[in-house]
Length: 308
Image (tube, rainbow, N blue to C red):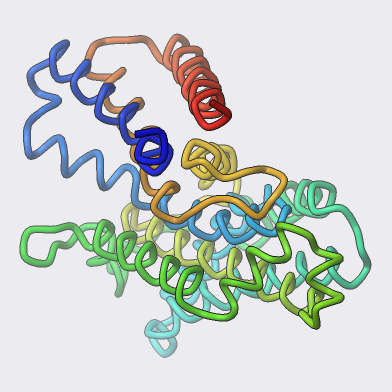
């Protein structure tokens, strides 16, 4: 029984929240609202998958929100050029991956703390994103990849399809490849991993590049949804939701423990909280307070249960 409860992780909390909000407001349990929740969770889920790789190594990436904004700006700017419009998505992904590589090199090569490097990136990359658009919003009403943000396939929004695809691919990498085993090994004991022959430095660069790539993909999704990008506001505080989703999913901030499926549940908990509190009429001020307290309480209960 104990092992079964540990395997479920925060799933009981997610179910309890859904039951409570459905009882408080009948609209919460509708199929239409379920689709809205999945859409709201999609971008955060993509960022959180990248964050899962980083946290599993014992690091953290506080720059993903800023990278998302810079990648979205790059995609919008390229999409405005009739001759290069089809390169908008590759441009966004390249910008995201590039910033991730810079983070990885500073952390693995220069041996700077991940918190300091990505905290600096949070502000510096945000400044770059603002410079890219001349500190103004960039719009494109004829965006070539707008279907990603507003279209559906068999009735399922493309945002949800992309997010779930990222989850499956991330799970496969972590659980079915040597690379994934190395990620867990580095988080468990980086020095032991190095002595066993794992090239820890190269691995860390790849992990942060992957986080940047997913942030770039999040930028594509966000800009496709809005037909616009803004270096100052887009992606603001997204990094905190991504970290919260990973920690709610049962990952350890010290590295070596966690799963993508746990991250999926964590992201859904955050989306359900946001959606449910709005439907029951809680003001935005109390939404922040309530979400924070529920997240802290849920993680505390999970830790106590696992210790027992």
